[in-house]
Image (tube, rainbow, N blue to C red; front, side, top):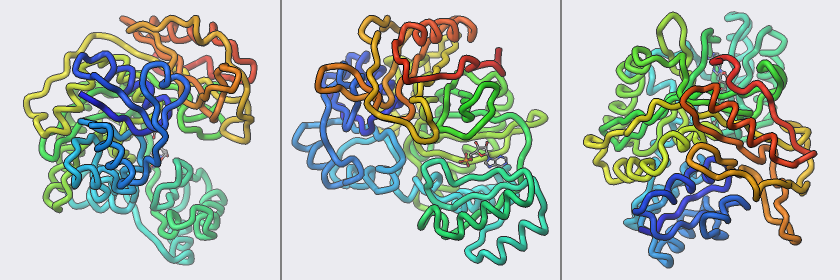
Length: 421
Ligand code: AMP
Ligand code: GLY
């Protein structure tokens, strides 16, 4: 079959790498892709948030299946447009994608189905929000309601921070996304991510992961999109995963169906775990990046069969073929990230790296220079990813890849996985 993947980061390189290994895949196109993806798939120049353009492209290229990587096309209704055009697609409707695009919507759904989550209140009035914060005290969590590219959440440790966050959000720093602010109880515990496929009714777990959001060693410094991840997450034991399914994920999926907006696609539940009990931090309606890289490393070619079963609404009979393995990915970022950084620096050594079912350096933000060299084109640039019988083995293999990358303008954390190791 002909498959189109939308997106151009490490997540999409990992998806393309797994899909490509499945004999069902005849032709693989990725839009917009990156320099690494160009090595294994056709690259298309396409406005991926334009549903009409994506449908026309799918028709012209006889695309049988579209996998939507990032949230922006989902929020823009690209899955709705493909469904209307009769093209099979993995990714929820815009109405179901509100589980990611509106924090207050998710909280309402949790309340409606009694899913454990942090206590919350929503505000459109700055004075009322300030009064609420003074009354609740710190620590407290302040969130812009809408999509803010991962920057709309402030975990305020004291009241001064909380007041500053409110001032920033109500001053319009996040545009329409910050017109409404959600204020939450600050939960304690250990965070982990739980990934499931949903076909509207049925739910299939496809893996757990933990990521490192802070830029510095020992999980210090500013927040990033993620500096590394590993799977499985030891804290998400089978017993806790069962609780998360029974108390959070299945009730959410049932509530979405009851509302007439069934959830179909990847549901990524961010959980806070304390004393054996999971509570929902947030939902995303897509694979995580870089979490997807470790999930794809572990699932390999069967990932396509599972995603197809999800899109074709036959998840009830789908099964994951689990190996007793571990995967870990290390993000190489441009110096300066998550602050200002330069683009265009040359990266050497990539063509000599091993590319096996246990070691892959996925490209996140790269481009091909006029001289044929691979250049950095973003903040997070490469994902050195590996799989092993133990987490330690996976980590050693991932850092062995890092050591062979010749990129003086890049950096990475050297302690990915420390908590689990
Ligand atoms: P979100 O974008 O909602 O995932 O928030 C980003 C990060 O903020 C999460 O991964 C948590 O580390 C933290 N966070 C969000 N909400 C809460 C909460 N209610 N209590 C504690 N930490 C939170
Ligand atoms: N790594 C976090 C995310 O993809 O949202």
